Amino acid sequence: MTFDSLSLCTPILNALKTQGYTSPTDIQQQAIPAVLAGKDVMAAAQTGTGKTAAFTLPLLHNLANSRRRASHNQVRALVLTPTRELAAQVADNVMKYGKELNLNYNVVFGGVKINPQMMKLRKGTDVLIATPGRLLDLYQQNAVKFQQLETLVLDEADRMLDMGFIHDIKKILALLPKKRQNLLFSATFSKEIRDLAKRLVNDPIEVSVAAENSTVDRIEQCVHPVDKNKKTRLLVHLVKSENWFQVLVFCRTKHGANRLTTDLVKKGIPAAAIHGNKSQGARTKALAQFKDNKIQVLVATDIAARGIDIAELPHVVNYDLPNVCEDYVHRIGRTGRAGKNGRAISFVCHAENEQLHAIERFIKLRIPKQIVEGFEPGQALPAEPSKPVKSGAPKRNSSGKPANAGQKRRRPAKARKTSGNDAQPGKSNPWQSKKPKPANRSSVTNNQ
Ligand code: AMP
Image 1 (cartoon, rainbow, N blue to C red):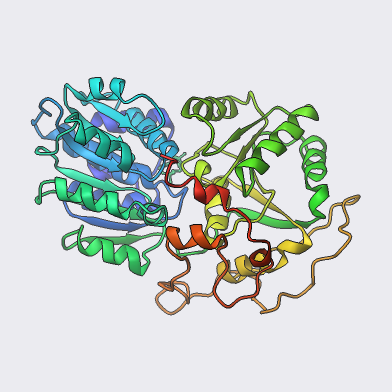
Image 2 (cartoon, rainbow, N blue to C red):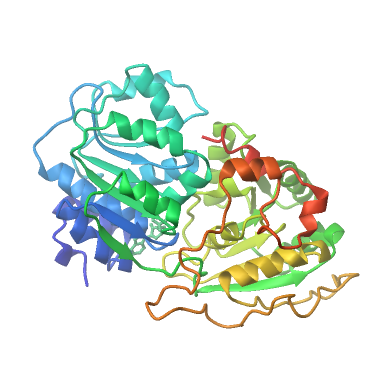
């Protein structure tokens, strides 16, 4: 299939040629005709599947085709995203794909001055990309109005719920005209997402391209068992000896990310950290330098890394395993994007063994272990997990969905915040006794 056969207008087709896209991805093939037809859409799509273009291209086409114009402070299409980085990323895509169209685009998020955003919104906006908190601030200051709103997109809806944005979303929904097109994109269709969908979409077309909780096949995953105190040396060794460039490294805490960044820089490896305590300016700068190959290693926490999309990112390293199994899938989804191969490497110390098994059970895959010479752990990881998992591809049921589809995996953000760990209830968990501070979770509410 080609993009021409999807009946998109010429300016959009030209932009796609400039991007070098030859054919639509699965999610694009399914979602674009439905959105063009004005239908509500619920789409389950993993990160890296081309989901942004799946809603952006037909949205732009529809807006450009109608002769309506946005009046002062009005918005015709609103895209809500959970994080600033994702908002910036989506806005980047909208501007790229809609470059040749005579439409106005704006992006608003917290952490930066509100006044310039208010000024830009004055003349009316065709596509506004926003994080929920800042959008509500702007509404309260009369800087944004929704009487002319035609389309609402919720991007990464599952993440929005995880991050506790449900109340903001409900407030925003109450401000919008009842008659509108709704597009809901989510990595998974959990019960919570279906509950949200009930109040949002109307007779939706459901599209799905990837099984829930599965990891992208193109990503080669491996575990390096290593003692905790040797992780930094191992990272330095691998980056230098294997000539790694553009490595995205995940740490569990902001403090850990800062410390690792300092240690890497001391060892002569250009690195920067990106997390919720960094100013928006510092985060944007670090990301730009990483994309331009000016820094070799970007050290991130989970929330900050959401929305990072770098073409052909070859390596993702889990310096610490995530507390939440889904975060493992999101983390490694930063590589192997848009049909490219990628490697996801996890450094796992003895204390992280239970967590590794929880992840393996979650993705239904045994991750191969490789000890790096010179970094043999003092205490080896037990060879077999306490509950065996099958190696190979994730198990599916007859409908092609994973056998555990729809099962609740996470507790609400609030509960996680107070309990300080994300292990499944009843499972033994080495983190439980240590009660670590889930720093990247505690930044959730101020992370916009
Ligand atoms: P997303 O899932 O929206 O984050 O997109 C992942 C990556 O795929 C981005 O770098 C897009 O620029 C790229 N992409 C989107 N659609 C296509 C396409 N049809 N062909 C090639 N790359 C694409």
